[in-house]
Length: 388
Image 1 (spheres, rainbow, N blue to C red):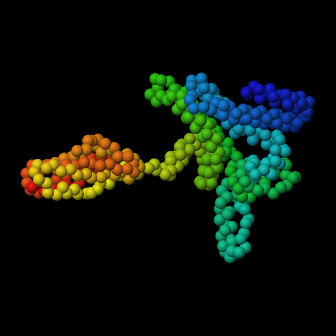
Image 2: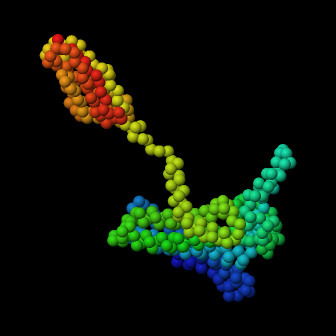
Image 3: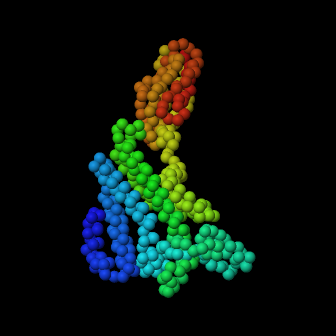
């Protein structure tokens, strides 16, 4: 695919390539930069298409995983190339700089100022406090009134349009997210270095003799995560930059590279936090059956010796799961005639047959013990009767 992309570019831009041999030095440099940008764009598009082709399906085999590992190494090369591309394209293609100043997302040379939005309905003291709060929202390193200009990444900020500003004169970015370009570059490098360390590690763990052996599906999942952590590195460094607001360039350098190198850890932490915030699965109590027994006491009355007399009780299950009665135990001269175990379906009931067979005269008092799979088991029913 990469070879096809190079061939297509060579065909489409053959005139530019020939012009490299005939134009002046400035034109040659510009054309070289255009070709580099186009080749890089084709490479990136090829990686996107290949990503969806490689990672489709559910199961991964040895052949597919071998292609995925090759893809990961190509992606590392692409990430490192992306970190240096702005330094090639912007100085050599002046028109690109003009486009960047008009785009909501771009790379420009300049600094950041707070948006000057004043609510006239507020008292003057509150207006000043709001303005100071807006000024504090701009990181120290990027403030136009305290620091020299530098190349910055502008996301959503506005820049006054000045068609004459094509010689890299600095601009003032109002609002939006602004972060030093070198911070984004270092984060991409850090993430690429981390991925370079991880991919060979997963290759090693595919060996059946490795103590931390992983299968093909697990390796594919981890490799996808490595790609995503490189993609997420610029977002992580932007967030960290505004949270920390480094006071020195050395601090920004450390923060940027560390944010990229540890982007895998950051994503795992975010996933763990989100999993804890998800609603808990239903507890066993909510999925278990319920039990209702009626009556709670059975009186057989006066029964001539040796009887017997039979009576029944009802056991109901209003819960969502089947009720399993495992044992029915009576003592003395009372007994259960219902065979166990038996099931009671949800939202239904069943009957337990009991018998009183007195052997001597006199009042008798015992209990029926019911053992089941519901919470609160075992439960009991009082049994009374009088032998006459």
